[in-house]
Image (cartoon, rainbow over all chains, first blue to last red):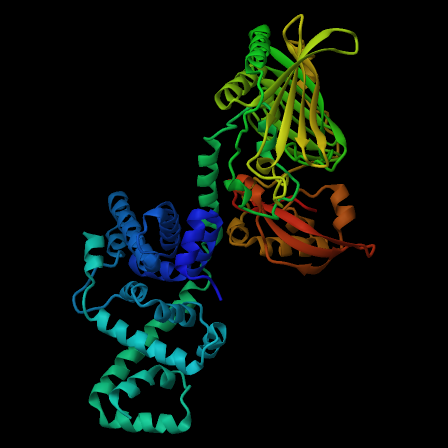
Length: 180
Length: 449
């Protein structure tokens, strides 16, 4: 089985920066999906995702809780997206483009909020969501991959759904902070 | 079934993974419970959103661009450490063809550690400073030497297991800069107006402007600035207390000379398997020979230590200071049937080629060669007559996934493993190196065929 984030980060800091590639591979899709939701533009989302990954690497030694790498990365992504948005705002007179930056709308959960909340899930729930929906494995394949019964996979996913549902009904304070 | 159980089974139900009996009990509970119905509805909405993620992110691949940037950051950090730009280390910083790709990324992070030893720094410094003073202001220079490499291969490619190949440089500093570097199969020249690369027998590439260096000749052109290079070496010796040795000898004609030897040891211990697989894990010895009478540097050698004992990699055997060159020195005699490289042309359908991955580019290129569509193949490589004879009608046996190596950090090459069958039935298995052109963004062949 693949190494958990914490070990990858330790190896990356103490042995070889090349271990960072496994973290990029693991989180490129959720990060991209999040940024695409924010920026509504594939090219910009790719650029922002690259930039966020590089910044994450540069700041890796400042990460206090390696278990929360995923949500920390999404936070960096939020800042990069905001910077990009502000640059666009300065550079562009095309108001449509500015509106393209998804602002929070009352009563309408923006789809990128899901990517944010997923990043805050407990590790095992998060891992299954990533494999099932971002990497598009079937539940059976996830079970085989993690060598656990399929019933455990579906139950864990149900619990993840319940947490997501609950968290999506309130606005995240981190998000508000990231955007302020 | 209670609400808790019902909610735990929800994903299993949505995935159709519940056994019949449990599914019936689940449905029964749901039909009687409004809370669970509401939760099911929100789960379905969530599932709908989540299922979009796979398709929209399917083609996202950040690993290579991100790791390239990170490696660059690391290399920059490293280059600010010891061994910044000393005389001979320039040569090896550029390219090391042995084992490239095998341990991609690993060796980049290893810094050189210098072991101070019994020392003659003062004597070495004296000989080197005298060498710098003796040169004064150069107007031109001519260098002749030999390097272990392949005759037609890249100028910065060094292969310790190959035979020696002659290498020669001419450079004029005044009135205008002009230069030429030549190996038996490859010549590059800048005549003050244009820069041309010629690879024997019939390939040529033109940059329509003067350049300070081009086609990976940078290391040799830097060495041609002898006083600058010697100054740098001196600084490094003094700063790091490198192990040096000074000997007084006589050359074949009985002229007295001073030989300064500088040793650099890597931080790798002798039993490490990476030892000597890269320059930064290798031990080297550099020898400078100064003429006692004039004080001038007359020869230089660089050895790789520990690679089957001591291997001479590069030798500068002749240095002419301020020679006068004939006017045609910086021109290249091109054959009539030379084929010019077109990788810089922007095609009408350039976008189609920009969108390709290196694997797709390799396949398109080989397939075009197979049906002798030289127009198409010419979008990836310069098609010379000799190329057509060799590669016309090939069949692809297999193409693998691309990989990158240490050299990719410097030039952006991606390598695609391939096996092809030539028209005469010969099979050829190798890696094709592809690089995106800076202005056209198309992949073009950079080696390996």
